Structures are given as structure tokens and as C-alpha cells.
Length: 185
Image 1 (cartoon, rainbow, N blue to C red):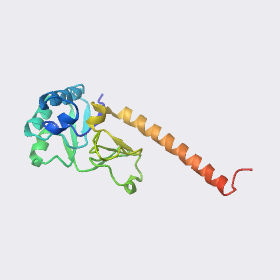
Image 2: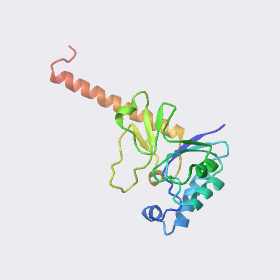
Image 3: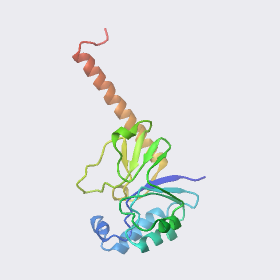
Image 4: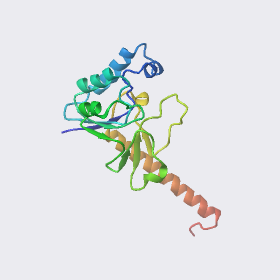
């Protein structure tokens, strides 16, 4: 049986990413990223939400050493020729709906969230200027997790986020009813 995992912003071969993540070299950074992905089995499926590699060597290493089915949602730094990604990934997408979730590199506009439960994305880095977004946004950037997240964990986060959102809506409805003198008698 296969398991499904999500990650983003691996930035293999990227000196600044290695430094920002606390690694003393690009090689040590890339080793840690690849090791976290080698836990996946041949039958597993990995969705990468963009920015896989900043060097040709990093992309080739990813393809050679990560032995599962690999799907890519293109990110802003995925700028090699399309053929190079097609050799390393089974499927390539710009944006994708999957199991009532939007998969994207950058977070999508809230208006686009209808008929979906969450937006699985990357792009926003730990320690950057952009804020971490609340539910229904789930950031799978390697900066935050240092591992791929299994679908089951994502679905658990979605369920918790929906419970919290529903409780907030109920509290707001009660508050508004009280404000307008519409409490239940």
C-alpha cells in the first residue's frame, strides 16, 4: 500500500537556504534534506510544492536518491527547462486540486477556497518577512518540518482547523444574537 506525503522548498544546492537553516555547508544541508526523503518507500507518493533545487546537481541527486513516485507543483525557483523536471518527476503541475485540497507553491487567494478544505502550500519561509497564515492554509515548507508530512497528518490538521473555525463561528453567532437581543428564550 502506498502512502502520500507533502513537502516544499527543498532548495537543494542553495547556499542561502543552507545558511538560513543553520547548516555549515550546502553539502550538509542537501544531505539532511535527502535523508529526510529517503524514509519514503518505493510505493509512496511525494508531492513537492515547488522550489525543489537551485542547482542541476541538486535536481539530479533528488531524482536519483529519492526512490518514490514524485509529483511537482512548480515554484518560483523551479526555472530549469521543463524536460529536466520531466526526467525526475512522474507528474508536473502548476496548481492542482487533490482530495478537496488545493496544492500550490504560493498560498492562493481566499476567494479560491470554495469547495476545498485547505490549501497545501510552501513558499513562505521560517524567519522571513511574510507571516505564517492561519487555517485553511497549511505550509509544508521544509523550513518548518524538516521532513515530508504524511496525508494522515495533513487531514488531522484540517479536521482540527475546521473544528476551531466552526467553534469560532458559533461563538460569533451567539455574540451577535446577544448583541441584537435575539437570544434563545
